[in-house]
Figure 1 (cartoon, rainbow, N blue to C red):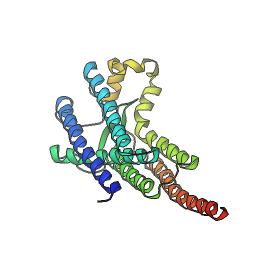
Figure 2 (cartoon, rainbow, N blue to C red; figure 1 turned 120 degrees about the vertical axis):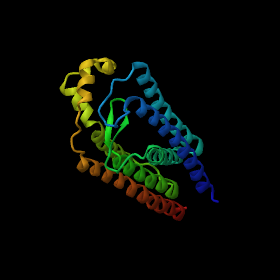
Figure 3 (cartoon, rainbow, N blue to C red; figure 1 turned 30 degrees about the vertical axis):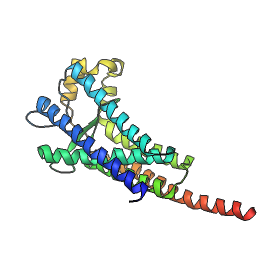
Figure 4 (cartoon, one colour; figure 1 turned 135 degrees about the horizontal axis):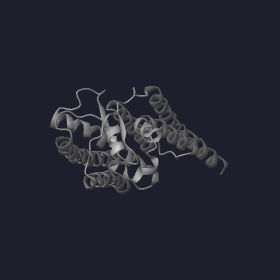
Length: 242
């Protein structure tokens, strides 16, 4: 087995196992706070439990970043393996939930995706599509060994911001329109916020903005491939001049 493939397999196995642990925790949380039916509307959560949940999310990102750092030999490889780790973890997280509690019923079911810095929500299909895109980008980075140019970073940042907007729009509007920004550190202890969050009905998902973000990711992937050819031509010109 080639070294890159062996590393990809190892990173994937780690991510699949980690996804099982993450989904098990979520099963426990849903049994505690959503015993009847899961929704993206907030429940009153003990402040201590909420803090632990935020720490868990930070730890998750740290673990995924660490496995990418360990697996790669340079920034490009480390980023690629981080993307693979994150994407495989995310996809199998929903796979394990399906095994454990037969959820989601469809890819269009809504989920609470993240809590930092505010609550992210969206249909399950959206993060899965993002994860598959991340895997494609990671494979291109590993195969073509291209330098991450300013154009590539610009596309990635713009794409990320567009997609993050679709995930955070509903709760961001809830906070902004009801003047909860000034009480942001204590939102979950604010009875008015909890009451409004418990009644939140998400707007139709902004698929048009999501696909615009995915298009930016596609441009980044194309740019990675073009950078390979640019690098090959540059090396040939240097060798010819010598």
